Amino acid sequence: MGGDDVVVRRWRRVNPAGPAQWLILGFGAIILAFAAAFARSAVQQEFRVAEAAFVGGFLTLMLVYVWRMYRTGIYVRARQVRIVRVLRTRTLPWADVADVYSRPARISGLATVREAIVVRLVDGTEVETPVQRQADRVVGPRKTVGPVLTDEQFADTVAFLQATRLYEAGPQE
Image 1: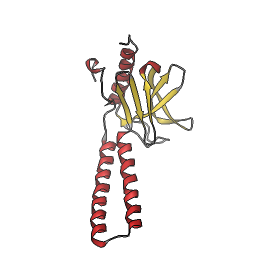
Image 2 (image 1 turned 90 degrees about the vertical axis):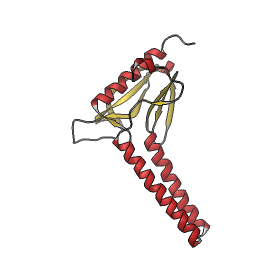
Image 3 (image 1 turned 180 degrees about the horizontal axis):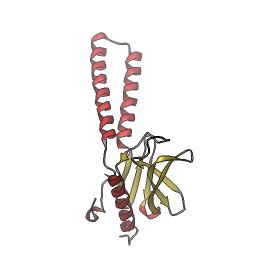
Image 4 (image 1 turned 60 degrees about the horizontal axis):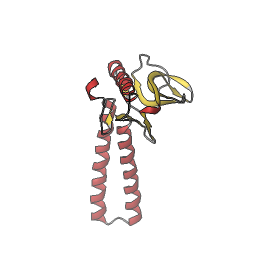
């Protein structure tokens, strides 16, 4: 995440994929194996269309959910930052971003034990990202969906986003 690669044309994941993301991909592989086994048995045993459609639809939804969980994080490219959550993706122009910082993640307005990266817009709106820092405290509320980074990874990610914001705030072409 050096200064030379700040301008990117394609979406690039800023936060590194951690153990949770690899575990999620493993779960996706298990679902694919189950789907292949089901398809094979459905062909051999001639399942009814309704049964096959129900199971196939369920497996498809599970694969989409696993894929979205894997993709959860922060992505950047020239002039935009994208915040990907499991159920929602939000794309913001860098021109609308006033600051990038961290603060305790919130659940229904209450602080949790982990910090999250926050994007503050020029209108004052705060957009909390799903990217969090590992908590020093073991006990307490925490969000369970989203990448959890080490202190060093978290600091590097915040610094990269701040540098990118400053770069993108410069004169436009």
